[in-house]
Length: 463
Ligand code: ARG
Image (cartoon, rainbow, N blue to C red; front, side, top):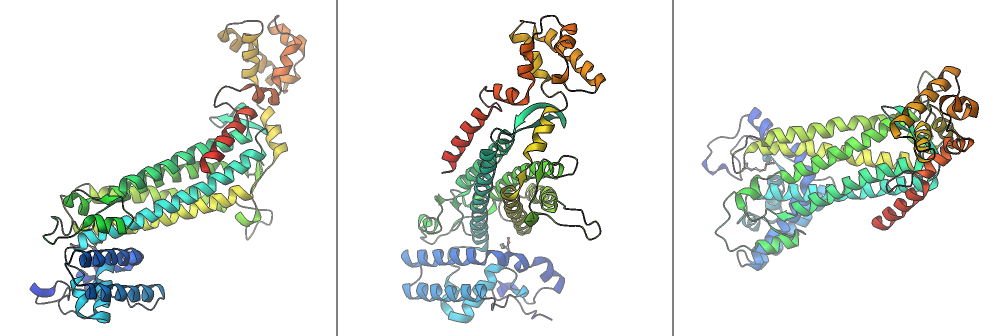
């Protein structure tokens, strides 16, 4: 059994230590040890500031600095003995510091509290994740740009309702995801810009009477400024929620793309072949090559959405300022961040490795009367029919082709003229899929010339 004597950090008014169940529900060291590096960075900045403002002596600050470096190397080297009785990462680090350097360790906690300490550590941790997400997104977007560049003019079916709608280009489809992940990237950057304020020095909730320099600690930790309200500083978790919100939308985008890859890699579609490196086999069916990575990316969304919901619910009823409920803010964010980074990396790998089946894409592009809209547009443009009438004429021709089991370009001119006398042989020019996509040059359209323009714009943006 762990030692149940009263706690060395706050045991002054306690005669007895906690019940084992109390200790179990109270401890966060099992997960918040992931913030060890951030905790030590925060303590180093705080100690240096306390010395600079004359609150502690330079020699104490130096002892603290060296001691903290030792603690960090013990943690990184895996020799640190984490203790559940010491509750969390903050008290584990401080207790070890005390064992290493003695009395000066007790001066480190001057002018701060675990409340501003944990808020600072967690911000630093989430900030790293926003940066990692940014890197992951950029790598994925580069992979998509490479795919788009290779197949800017490859035709494929575009779908609505998963029914063949109009032909589009492979490049255009890839660039649709570049737009989506581009917005995800900007959400991560926005969140980072907004969250980059330092809670340290807010102390328990009210600030401190020591002459601390909050600008100094903020700058040392790479924050733009200190948080302006001490109550808000210790009780705000918006920064984690914004990360989870941006991560949720990003995961949703990843999942949609993953779903397409699952469909596209099926024997029925054969639009893409995933590489061996990003597929798995079946233990019973030798012919199988399964898109497991895509399926898992699709499924990871559950964790990330779940984390977002969980943290919203933890926070929604809390009065100011800190409540211990907020200790439940971390695990799900850690889990969601891990899931997101893995999903981004797996998607990037799949995208870089996959090969589009140009012939299958082209064959499917022409099927399903995909150029019917081009025919209707031609009837408007050339003989000058009102669009509604052109739509009706085209619908009649589609029904005719369908009843004969052929595609629109396989109808004869005489067949077409039997439906509308103004149709001429010219019409066959627009029934080809290449012409169809080539003609859609409106801004944002699928024409290869437009797609290449957008690729150039994004390449310049990503630098
Ligand atoms: N382990 C705590 C957490 O994660 C640290 C803050 C504890 N503060 C307190 N007043 N008990 O939230």
